Image 1 (cartoon, rainbow, N blue to C red):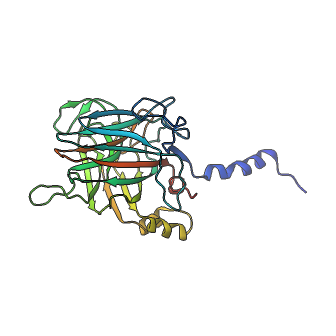
Image 2: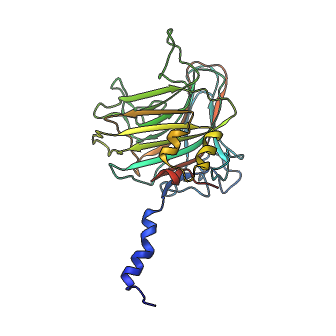
Image 3: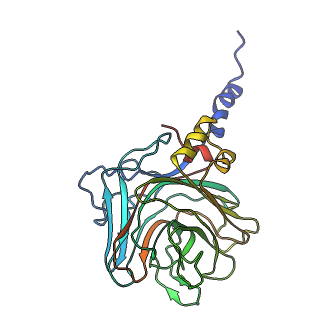
Length: 313
């Protein structure tokens, strides 16, 4: 039998690796120490990937809030899961809120397309509660009124992208009151500091039910550089949606487009991105509420393509 020339043989062996789906960031909230506390500054998870070396989830809160590990992780049939979860919430009078953030150790080249996913469960008792997953710069930057705000505060002045999963300013009734079923995207715009492009849609998310949130950023942007054709998409999926995707074979963007509860798109001139100096951020806030609302986040993934963030068990 003729043996291929060694360099050709090595190329043949290595070629499939370049085509393999790559998971860039993962957080399953499975602390190696079962007594770990999200607010204590301990390492977040034994299986974390893609974060800055020795980074931890940090907590910055105001008034009445909760930010803690949950030993029971979220799960959805057809999706690989492990470990626990993170629960964040707010309650009581005033303008309570909490930001939970961890520094990325991964940079995405400008012009790339990235995908993300996470499991989510809500326990919302008041319509003025909102929660989101975002990517923030961790810098002191101006808000939409031009006022300089500290980093990691309860404002989106330093966020490149926010995926909102409860009421916000995306849709209000004739009296200006936000509806409880509103979901949406905010993405930083170029070149106005603090400005955001917003897109929203209405989709009721039942309390106590687990949903799969999938998102993508096409034409990721470097800090300060325009993204003339960027598009940010968020899909919210139920268990039935994921079942239909699995029945059709490997997860793909077209399959997710065809099987979802809602699809939300923001586009043109945006600053959605991920660099190794950015932070992944979980936020919960309430405006003048008197009851406690909370959300559970789990299985946060960012990858180079759709299969990498929707791995089968």
